[in-house]
Image (cartoon, rainbow, N blue to C red; front, side, top):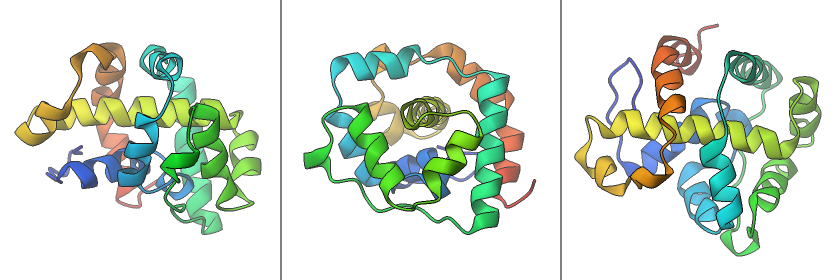
Length: 169
């Protein structure tokens, strides 16, 4: 994934950036999360694809991320792929890393499952955008799982995401 700062990370870094991108402080490290999401059910994968990013969700994700930084919440431990059989398992592992995470996301109107859906949908869109300038990433993209509306949404918010990633508000 890349931002308007023109980073060109490798696939593992791309996954990390994607999960961290919106709310890294709250989610597991991406390389592990990637393998964990591969264990999701087809229904969960379809729900991720169908999830529609919008201004409300994005605004709440941004606010939660800023507050997580303020509270000093850091990236969570790598999820154990042997314990991830669905999206709820992945969300439970992400929430268990710091007792402050669940109340924080609830404050911004997310259930753990929706929080994971929103983050993964945003990350997937970011990976598609990165793939346009990174052939290695492009080869790894399953086009049947791409939600182009979310890609367009991500592209229209890249400056805000880059500012957040750079520590700006």
